[in-house]
Image (cartoon, rainbow, N blue to C red; front, side, top):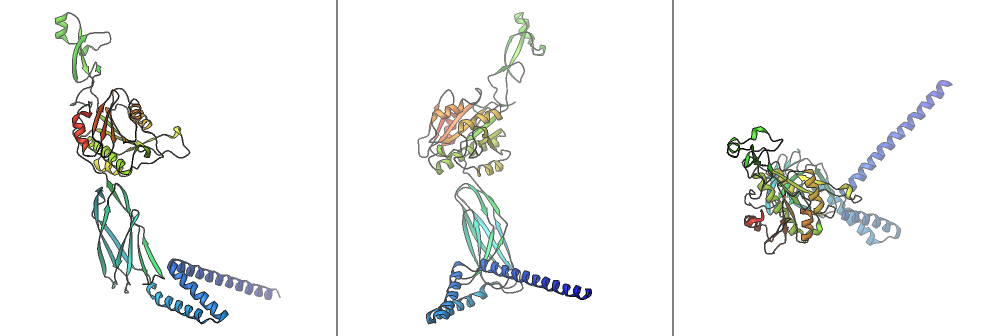
Length: 432
């Protein structure tokens, strides 16, 4: 009796287990079918399916001939469109860009190659190539096994910024647009669109140079640039005693030197949206900032390119920070300028200038670049945040304006009507 009960119990458990396995398979198949329908049936296809369901229901309930006709037509459309999406994709897609760094206003050539790696005929399809916020569509014809289709594309880079190309998808559907299937490739290529720059005069004028450069006006007791001879005071080193002058005057005389400093240029770019009249004015300012920094890099100087860090919405003055762009190479500098944008969530130019002076001492000259809506008084307030030995030059972009230069005690204010005015204005003496 015990053995019989055990056998019956095992059979019951086996039946329950079998039912559970069957239910899991059925649920898995239903989920797969639902996923296929969700990914395959378009909005137009869903309307056709609804017409089929309601047509059959109305035909059965009311005997309407029109309802049966609508159901038959809907079913015929679905049957005719289904073969276009049957079968698996077996494509290999490659996109080759001729370059990944261009100047704003240029075009990039790209080659799209689609190969059918399957053993069966591949039906026509469409390759969607996202380019930034836009989309390029390339139509792929019918491909035999092992065949490939190549198409030349042109990507326009009208404005400065970073353009992401991809991820690409290839789609296949029926001519009516009821059913649609697609396959994605996750690869994303990045294009840096650099600002337009101009070549400007050497920034030697007004700069404090190192060994071979112009010395400063600060007098010290030991350096390479001889200034004058003065009378000895307690604490002077005997190494600097000028014996000829001592013999002539009868008093102990020592040499005095002018201090030589390493030239460090700061380029501070204002990112506040309310400083600019429009996007074109901001782009002109970015181009001017990049031109100044690029010239310093070409001359082998220490260049600091500073912009405001993003201020969180809940943050205040305690969260102020600056962001510096890499200036190790011209390419790194221009890549960095491709990423800056004007926004409301940034610090004012005065705070950025003050933090720059605190974080990076021994500056020689600071260029403050902003837009036409920035008052001159605020530029003066920003300039006084710099050490007294630092020369400050403010560059205000005002498109279409007459280029002017005003020199004040705190700073020189240069009004830039066009980017091409920058070299001439600097040559006229923006640097004192």
